[in-house]
Length: 382
Image (cartoon, rainbow, N blue to C red; front, side, top):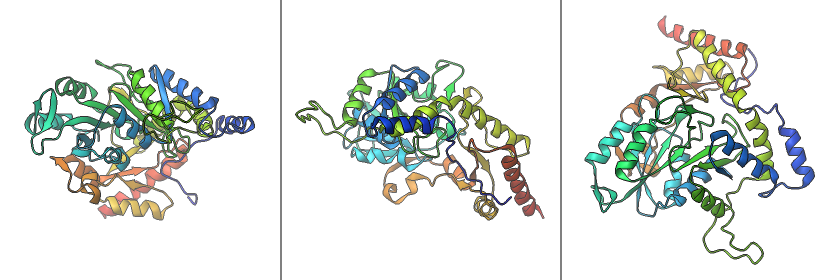
């Protein structure tokens, strides 16, 4: 095959151009305009929350969530080490410090280890969870729903009740994923904790080019986030600002694209699921998703003992792939941060290869990639 097969790219075959042309015709192209409000309303209805707040990026959404959840300078926030660095950097934006946690078999945060950390490494003082090593208040947990899997929110919410920390869900990779059974049956990723952040970056299941959104059951937190995202305007005529705000509002042009994408989200999830199954039917043992959830199947993971060699071989045959993210606790900005019993994340870092998963893929593409992987593995057996 001579054509290039990318890892994960947008599918812009709906009403994107129609809505963008309409926004341009109306000359509402910046952080005001009807499409922003319409996309917020449409997303809130989709995930069954009372409201949503459109932002410039998923990173901006996480930054606002930390502020709105009251995380202060000098406090600690528990985060996963196996995630994209954008899930962790906002902790430093508010001058707090991350504490890195291992993952479980779903790639998401290991809640059993989190429970042991809270019980063994911390203590409750005056209603606050305190790290016994440094005396810092652990005020929040950022849990990431990796690749469309949903973390063990049942266990995390139990720990929240016991220890009192805030929960921020990074659902940037799990737009459309929801739990099918148990206490949170029917709940979408991002709607269980205090606040949830979504992302519409170009490689996500739906895109606005850049862009993100905050969702929550708590309208007060969302109102605070909307206020801060628009430069904390208390008087738009006389430019009165009582707090430090941010230029974090999504643009109307981005929202016009996002509206068209959101209209197609369920179709995209069906395509993702079908392509995943096609890989498996062609003998590629992709890593599974939780059976008790409806995942959006955002990213496909293949485990191999020869990670770098496979990535090179696929690249030589016009197929883009990548390893899972470098573990954040081992990156230079975070090597002196606290981490706890990192084991399984190291294994996944060494063995996972993400392979093409765009909704533009057809069966011929999937078969081509599958055959390349078989060829590669068979070469190693000779």
